[in-house]
Image (cartoon, rainbow over all chains, first blue to last red):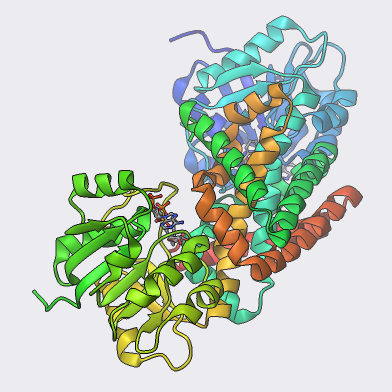
Length: 295
Length: 295
Ligand SMILES: NC(=O)c1ccc[n+]([C@@H]2O[C@H](COP(=O)([O-])OP(=O)(O)OC[C@H]3O[C@@H](n4cnc5c(N)ncnc54)[C@H](OP(=O)(O)O)[C@@H]3O)[C@@H](O)[C@H]2O)c1
Ligand SMILES: NC(=O)c1ccc[n+]([C@@H]2O[C@H](COP(=O)([O-])OP(=O)(O)OC[C@H]3O[C@@H](n4cnc5c(N)ncnc54)[C@H](OP(=O)(O)O)[C@@H]3O)[C@@H](O)[C@H]2O)c1
């Protein structure tokens, strides 16, 4: 077995993502010699102990990070500023501080100022997840064949970047470096906007008069169902994502809304060519996905 | 084997839906003693003959319906008015004229006036489909466990309604009667609006600068992919659906847009409670679907 990458890794937040990393680290042994798990509530740590997915649990984040050479924030991004302030004085010199948050500019904004000199801050985002949350929802194959994007600030220590990249490769993930602002734009269109739309259309359907609502459920297979699949996710996590990728999300939503309005106008005025053309372009994107084996 | 329901059934249009009905009728034998297939092009009829899914093919719709006791329109709904005018003089007395179109008020508007006295007009819509089209795309299990909605105008002959219902039950479908206007509203939200949104967001992504577009494809698994699954469907069929369910579709799109704008406003002004509440409602609908085994 390869030498463990880290002596001690502290997972701050141990839900779907954190507990998946914990499972992999416990199973493989070559990621960290010791896995420490922290959560907000004792109930979550009880589950972690019952599942046996960490060597040690700590309810206090500051104590959890002590002596860790890798600290990974795995809580909703809205909690990062508070967590960073709490743990900063306790981070070991030379430690790497990383995260898994779905937004990256906000993380740099909220965590960056707290990072003490000598600690390496390497933000990351594994593009993998399910609509479930909590430590029971994690599993060791979650990241297999998926992408993890690293958004290290300019001037980051190359060795620290490489160690975080290697951790994700050992989790089964492909790794790509990206500028944080670019990350937030790309994620706004591939993930955040689709989720916003999915939540919204579910709400629109839920507002229908009772009879129609029942029929929406009964006849959901006609298309609606595919939209709701991603709408079952955790409200706090998504609230935080939306609020912390505000600019890019609002821009993509504005573009989408313009396009939807143009489609509405074409429907209203019977512009058959326009509609056919737009539908054709939708298919083109879909076909590209199939060719890339992403469908 | 039960007595065939019909002596001769004429399928006007033989793509995904028509060829699925044809396959079932040919396999079961208790739906029609003779299956006649009509399409717009000889190429499609060549395929039908090669596949052996009809007893007879006819390029001329008028000739196809002659002597048939069931005529089923299976072309895009925009072609219905022209087809109805062409076949009306050739419909056998006492025949049933039905269809499979995704919109129902427009069908009654476009076909109704052409129906000769003594012919029973029983519009129907099987809620089943895939994103593929043409006679090769059909299959005999397409309608199994799915719903078919019948929207017979007031005063329709109960016996004719029952025979169409029985045809769909023999195709494996559950059958429900519904008012045509109500059908169009329900379908607008469960099917037509989701498709319009899916086509639109694919177009929005396709309009991004080249670099981001590549990354949309690469990282599609983060949510976008679920949206594109239904965006691969036939442009002409969907163009016709949108144009023929204009009022209900525009109303549902307007409701959705209002809701999306309210979400945008909450994101812009940081209204965390509003966002959480809307996300929570989205999950509720999703959970209802899971409970109903529709997910
Ligand atoms: N789910 C996805 O699909 C996905 C994908 C990629 C990245 N991410 C990112 O991964 C992170 C975690 O997501 P997840 O799905 O793993 O969430 P999760 O399953 O809901 O788990 C969140 C964890 O964070 C803890 N936590 C919550 N609020 C906290 C606070 N204010 N202070 C300290 N700890 C807190 C929770 O502790 P308690 O259980 O004690 O409350 C829990 O252990 C988020 O930043 C998210 O954006 C998620
Ligand atoms: N696809 C779905 O998911 C779905 C679900 C439920 C209901 N429907 C409804 O079912 C109907 C057929 O859809 P589909 O998916 O089976 O379509 P499809 O696979 O594209 O087949 C359409 C058939 O109609 C013929 N046709 C097209 N334009 C015509 C015209 N102007 N005049 C006469 N025939 C014409 C075509 O002939 P050629 O091949 O010779 O052009 C072809 O045989 C539509 O009304 C649609 O709304 C579809």
